[in-house]
Length: 435
Ligand SMILES: *[C@@H]1O[C@H](CO)[C@@H](O)[C@H](O)[C@H]1NC(C)=O
Ligand SMILES: *[C@@H]1O[C@H](CO)[C@@H](O)[C@H](O)[C@H]1NC(C)=O
Ligand SMILES: *[C@@H]1O[C@H](CO)[C@@H](O)[C@H](O)[C@H]1NC(C)=O
Image (tube, rainbow, N blue to C red):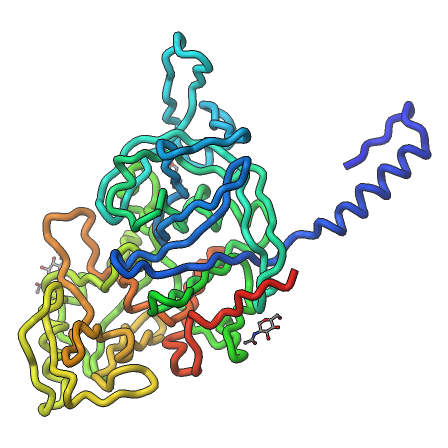
């Protein structure tokens, strides 16, 4: 904003105003942003690439839908002339909702006391402590149909991780892109900087050879041939889980929770202890969450047992059950399983949500082809030695080729169900740039 004091001349003042308004036009804010996502064949992680630092370098990150922030391995060749650590007590530390402060050794040159948090690796289940800091970050904008120009966030805050917490991430990956429900996550910082609604959408490809996409901002989300995946979504409330499990004491979980009320297979209710799913009067959710860090949906043991036996029962009698292939608990010969537009012709799994809305899971999302003749039910049993325990963790295989829109401004999840039913996939965004 140009300010005019009595000492600046009228001419200079007018000139500045014209200049600033024309600058405002040429640098008009993007309405939506886009990241390309590939599935790593070896680890089944969903990997994206951002650009960061000065000079800019590409940085590969594993997506973590429920991750509280972006973290980058600062031990592996991080050099930048624009990196700025967040000093203790400074405003950016509030993004982490922390008062933690790392006091440095004053005898060390350039000693600065900084705030930080524990970068977490949801794959290897490791964590450490890292410094919070900001650097230049660039990302492509979109009109929802093509890729438009690259836009810059001068200071995007992230945590500096290290080699220890990098363990188990896909080849070439040096950090995590956290999309969670916090002020520091990537969607939160991008929507606040570019001033659009806090909405983002995930559309993961089932193929390791073609890319899926994350959109930040409102639709359209156009997939070839011409399907707007932001239309015809079904909605269910996103529930805040007050349980502490993120590593910041007192904080709500950064993960996204929905309420699954019951599970049906071929329209028949699976007999299970529905108390495990219910949202109670204290607001504690029955802990159904969604995770890109789990390749397959994880079910609490008693739910898993009931679910697998109901699925096996619902399978046509002429389909032969074959020995299990780890980590799955029910595998079938594919000989007598037909194929449909929605994948193998197997019983339909319905997650019944609030207001009787249903998330239907068809063959392409329920079955995993472990070999040419064997299909396994792509759900796994929860380990009991892990905390926190969730009743249902909806994993990657079950959300591929489905568009999921996380709308924090309306606190709801919009889901498309299988896009195969609309003759498209999440790999069908036209990444051709038009700028
Ligand atoms: C921030 O921390 C305080 C106290 O530790 C907690 O009450 C509050 O819910 C937290 N806010 C968020 C957004 O997690
Ligand atoms: C159902 O689960 C709840 C919560 O874990 C438990 O308290 C209850 O005993 C279970 N009921 C049965 C019949 O197993
Ligand atoms: C992708 O977008 C470009 C630029 O708008 C366009 O020329 C091209 O035809 C599109 N591709 C398809 C397959 O529609």
